[in-house]
Structure formats: structure tokens, C-alpha cells
Amino acid sequence: MAAFSSADCSSYYSSSSPYTLAPVSRNGHYRIQFVKVSSLTNCPSQKVFSRLQTQNTSNSNVVGMRDVATIINPAERKTPVEKLRDGSLSATFSEERNDRLCFDSRKDESTVSITVVGASGDLAKKKIFPALFALYYEDCLPKHFTIYGYARSKMADEELRKTISKTLTCRIDKRENCSEKMEQFLKRCFYHSGQYDSLENFAELDKKLKEHEAGRISNRLLYLSIPPNIFIDAVRCASLSASSTNGWTLVIVEKPFGRDSESSAALTRGLKQYLNEDQIFRIDHYLGKELVENLSVLRFSNLVFEPLWSRQYIRNVQLIFSEDFGTEGRGGYFDNYGIIRDIMQNHLLQILALFAMETPVSCDAEDIRNEKVKVLRSMRPLRLEDVALGQYKSHTKGGITYPSYTDDKAVPNDSLTPTFAAAALFIDNARWDGVPFLMKAGKALHTRRAEIRVQFRHVPGNLYNRNIGTDLDQAANELVIKIQPDEAIYLKINNKVPGLGMRLDRSTLNLHYAARYSKEIPDAYERLLLDAIDGERRLFIRSDELDAAWALFTPLLKEIEEKKITPEYYPYGSRGPVGAHYLAARCNVRWGDLGLDL
View 1 (cartoon, rainbow, N blue to C red):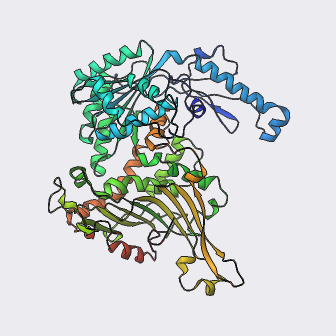
View 2 (cartoon, rainbow, N blue to C red):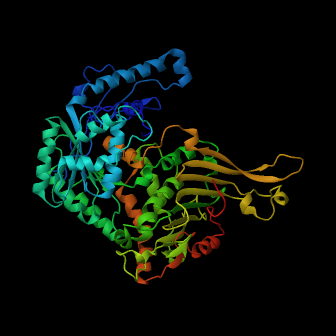
């Protein structure tokens, strides 16, 4: 099963109501959200709460996103040692435990209803429902919850349950009650057939949801697992006919968020006719991956790295994404977007922004997203000469013939859509001036991987140059963060080979997650769904962040399409087009994934 434990989830999200979230300790203070003042009259702690009521918009049917509470903790600011000496540390823990019991007393008064719009699609069946079951299996979902699938296909409840049951697993913990938990989960899953642009069909859904909510405070989460051209219709109907009237209503929106700046802005305007920005959760599942989440921890909590995180010590940064398969089954969709829109503009650019941002004021969502936006706005405009494009062609290897991109029946024979792209990006600020950030993303390559490579500068006046030889690149330190597969963090260093002579060798200090941690890493969708239910926006994309990302890539994409740039062809299963190596060479860089590696 996923690497969540019941104890983890009790502190992360302790009940089904946003009025009953457990307190979270930070720097000796507590932050608790969504607690009614009236519910705290018998609570042991002396705290002051304020609640922000339902937000009004131009549309009276739009329900405000969240209720907010502020807590003032009168505890003294003492070090942990001082607290241990005078016993106040244990008192603080006791107070937190009593608070949680108090908050849990209201858990029967609310419920969470999750509606997966587009429930008959592959994403829902392969990712969303399994992630929800994983959260349920680890007791991370509230006591009262209901899951509804909504799509145009005619289907009974039992048919939906049978379909999604094929994708549910209890991965690590083969507990005796696995089948029992699965059966209990499926009993919470229902289906409603309807059109995405039908107010009447969503009103029918609303009626069914209310039956399950049984008069409790209703909190509703809609996951839009549908094509972007029907986002606004679905949001309009859901907002007008199926919003909560006494709790919160949230909407998770899957990428792509438009094709360029204009279409993205139009989509945002359309959504904001019916939703507040705080209600819109734009999901990029790469931000939920364990190693991406660990990126900030690695940098900001380790003194050995933070001082080195700048142009003074870092020579270049490489963000690499490769898949060892083509567009099988997605050719029609992919041909409309291409690899730049599909991978670089969102996944890789989001990772770059997290990597390069300045230290945020706090770990709060808005503070982190503010710093990411600053990075994106500081980036130098991309030019055509800053990129290399490719498209995979047919190739025979080991007696097996692999298809070309245009062999896909859904792809035009004369398609110029790139399946590979490499780009050199620069951030024009004091920290990163002159440091190339190289991106590379492609399909039908020789391996499957996603990683960040940080290549450090050479040691000035290195005493051991004659022992290293002329290949200084091999002597430079390199930090590698493997996002997938086989998650790991390792640092390449130089050391002396044991013996009487002075011979240098390159070794790695390696943190391999599978070897270090026994728990399985949770799927990104599990983390992001749990965050959305909790109202945590840190790993979701804000509208100005999206605008800045599209502003960087839109001029380049328009130039590529207007000039009908022909991509360089590369064999299926190869390392990609030669043009990517020339691009790196112009930046005086060599791709770090070309040699033997872990």
C-alpha cells in the first residue's frame, strides 16, 4: 500500500469536515483551518478564532472556497531543550492531543463528495480511482465521503465498480483485510450518466449527492478528467446546479491549460465566470512526485547545498525527461500539442521554477508560488536558435520493427509535430545570470527516465589536474536527482583509489530510496488529491504562474508553426537527434545522461 500511515493522515487531515482539521505545529505556533467559533466553547485551549464566511462573486451560485481560522498561541518562544527542562514541551503535545479530540467531535457533521467528471476515461480508471482507494486504504479520507463517476456513457453503479476494481491494488501491505477494504470502498462509489453541458443532468447529480450527504455540511470536490474544450461547460453546469450550499466547492483541472497564452487566458476567464481563483486547482502531477517535493527540503534544510546554489558554483542545470515508447494510443491528442506543450511548458518548467526560486518567506502555498512566479518572469525569451526539434522514425532492432510517429493512424503523414525537443533557457537575475538551464524531453528514446542534473564548476587551480587528465568534465562534481524510475539522490565526487600510487577515481554518494526506505513511495495523484481535499495549494498552479509560463513559450511555438520548421528525424529507441548535442555544445555543456550511470 502507499507510504501513508493512519497516524500520518490523522495529523494531516483529521476529519471529514473543514471545520474540524487538526492543528499543525510550526515553530511553536499552531495553524488550524476551518473551525467554527461555536464548536470550540468546550475546548481546553485558550485560542482566538476568526472565520471568513462564504465569499460573494458576481454569480450568486458560486460558493466560497474555504473557511479560514486564525489561531493565536500564547506559548512562549523557547528552544526544545528549554521546553524539555521545564516540562512545557509535553504540555504542548497534550494540548494538541486535546484539541484534536475536540475537533474530532464534529466529524459527524460534514461530508466530502468527490465527483470524477469523465469517469469512463483512462485517466480516471488508471490513476484517479486507484489514488482515492489508496487514500481510503490508509484511512486518509474523512469518515463520511462519497465518490461519484460522471460521464456520457450509460453505465450502472455495479458496472462502474466492476470496471475500477480491476485497477485497485493494495501494493505493499498485503493485509488480510485488503479485499474487505476494497469492497467497502466500492460501496462508496456510484455513477451518474449525463451530458457535460446539461444543467438538468448536473441537477440530477446534485439530488443524488444530497441523498448521500444526509443533511450534513456538504463539501464537494469535482475532478475534471475531460478534454479542455468542455471544461467551461462542465464548470458552468456544476457551479449552477451542483455546488455545495453550506460548505466548500473545489474543482481540479487537468492539463493542458490551453495551447498558448491566448487560449490559456480565455480558459482562465471562462472558469472565473463561475469560480473564484481559490476554488480552481490546476493539477500538474509531476509536482506531486516524491523527489520533486524533496527538492526544496534538499536545498533549504542542508547547509552543504544552499550556499552552492548559485552561478558562483553551478556550471549548468539539466532537466531530462525521456520515454522509451512512442505515442501509441495518443497520437491524435499528441499531434495537436507536441512535446513542448505536453512536457516542457508544464512539467519541466515547474521543476525549474522550484529549483531556481529564492528562499520563500514560509512554506505556505502563496509564499512558494510567489517565488516561482518571480523565476518565470525573470527568464530570457526563447529564440528559435535556443531549441532543437526531433521526430522519431521507424527503426528495426533485434528483428523487431518499431513504427515511426506518422505510422500512427491518428497522425497525418506530413505531420511536423516534434516528439523530441531540447532547449537552453537562461534566468536573468543575480543568482543565475549566465547559467544555462538545459531541458530535454522526448518519446521513443533508448530509456525511460526523469531527472535533474546539477553540474558544478571545476575546482580552480586543481592540484590533481595531472592525475585527472585532460577531461575536466569527468572531474567536476555532479548532483543527480532521479525523479523516476528508481528514485534516488546521488553526488559524484573525486577520491583517491586505495594503493601506493596517486590515482583518482570518480565515486558516488548515493541515497537510493528503495534501499533506504521500506515504505513504497505514494503515487503523485494520491498526494495531490489529499492536498486538494485539505485545501493545500502549494503543489497546484496559480493563474499568474500559468500566464508567465505561457508567455515564455508562446512566441517560440508560434514561430515554429508559422515557419513550419521540420524536425530532425531520429531512430526509434535511439538517444535522440544530433541537434541536441550541438545545442549543448554551444552552451559549453555535455549532456550528463550519456555516460554510464546508476
